[in-house]
Length: 214
Image 1 (tube, rainbow, N blue to C red):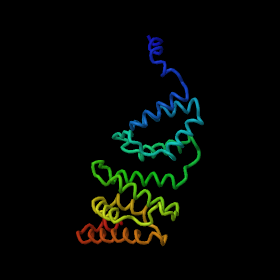
Image 2 (image 1 turned 90 degrees about the vertical axis):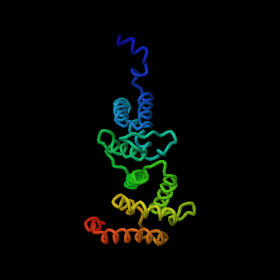
Image 3 (image 1 turned 45 degrees about the vertical axis):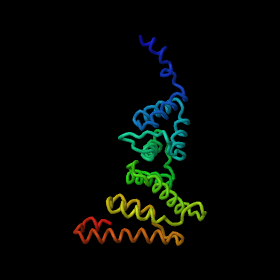
């Protein structure tokens, strides 16, 4: 009986790089990272170079796709990339750590996806894209007109609203966005003003322990 089943489902008995790569990508596309990890380790067993290169490619070059399906455990592409980072830095695959800027960018993306997780909220996508571009312009020190030097008033107002409702999460986003670079002074001052206002409101309402944390 087993041989008959293998004849029908011959795909599963063919230990090839292509097959395990396809399985891995299929699982990742529907947010099933545990199954993807199993496929990755099978791929590693027969082709170590391909396994490492595939992880590297997902971490560095993956971008949100219209057909990306999240899951309860992997709700966004940013979370998936973070799990891939953990696998990539596993001694089984690679003994080198990824560049800090790559890891912190993924951390920032996770913060954004968590803060603006409601897809029905119309401006979520616009705000997230603007914040990503603004952070990129800071950390890459770009002065190109294609990258914003200051956040829009819409983004500032939205950050204020979100920081008030989720101050701890907002604080970590805030730390990614402030800079001492003079060309970003206006936005940096606006962000600091937001947090001064929030801390003052916490103190006035008696939330001293939360205010002291910030």
